[in-house]
Image 1 (cartoon, rainbow, N blue to C red):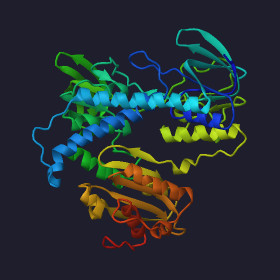
Image 2: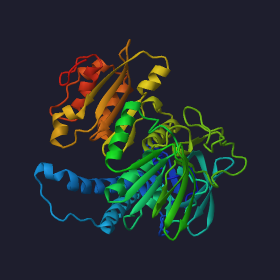
Image 3: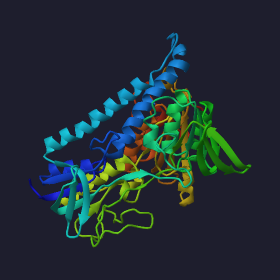
Image 4: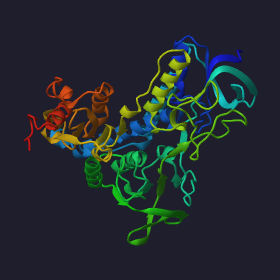
Length: 475
């Protein structure tokens, strides 16, 4: 077996496997090492995203939203259902089948591209050597002209709330519940906490969400965050802000979660606790002494604007480096690095990376919020359009939310777009493309959108920025 490659990628998640495939497409010899282990002990490529994050969570969100719509929306369409039931076991089987198909698909892609997959642990040694430990414990030393570190991230623990894999779990554990808990506590009202809380609330769990920050969704536009909080509370999520968790203890009556807020010390008793306070870079046993790769104070691998580390021909991408922990950000970094290694052009526009929260309504944004733009000294104009005025959204019984465009008042350049409403994660792609080409709000105004579509809401929001919207009063 070959022990020398042009490129060795350590990590087979959404950053690592695209890097490996693109490098192979660039006619380089490539190996991709991944040490992911499923709960049953089996190996799989795809990292947290495919195995215990993006893909399984979206499968559960889709299933639970269908139940919610059947219970609360179908009657408005004239669809009459009696005795609506739900089978959690079947839902979990469907999720598992989707994950298995996706992770197995990576191996098929590797085979087609000519990438050598290596299931096991990779450790960078000095001189661009990689110690590979296979599933059977055997070790080999591999040599590469270039090494790409894509080790990903892991759930962040919370002091005083120890995972036991049963009553107190991380985000992965929350995807594996075999039954709907009667009472659920989610610690953290970020993207992961809101998505997981939404899944189990729709299925019937009494769900309380504890967030240490006083502000809800501070990374989102303030108007969007306010609208989202209103809808989540309407759906039954008990969101408590400024709630600083001190600890959790399992007893006969359940798990006692202790926290403090402006009213003082509080206790909530639940059956299950999900800790979803964020993720941290995973670099355990990744770097030997003397590699020249440096970690910063928060544990991220230090890189330059092109993902180069301090060691020659050693690169790092994805969740283990600076920037938002998003699968699509890691993917684009992986592709860019693979092209740079091949002597081609590679670039990631960090100003045009979309973020999506896959709740209902969905939330998506790209670029600056209105508050960020003003804080940066920009004079801005904004335009909004409600989905309640969208014919397509009304036909879908999905009139909640709106689109908002933030543009520079002088140059008209689009600075940010923020959407809460149906299919926001799909609609945001148009805004990303517009910002990639430094489009103005007028460019969106003059782009013809099919009628009736949800995308017309973005069109009208751009028109509203100049008080020229057609389908809403201009004030």
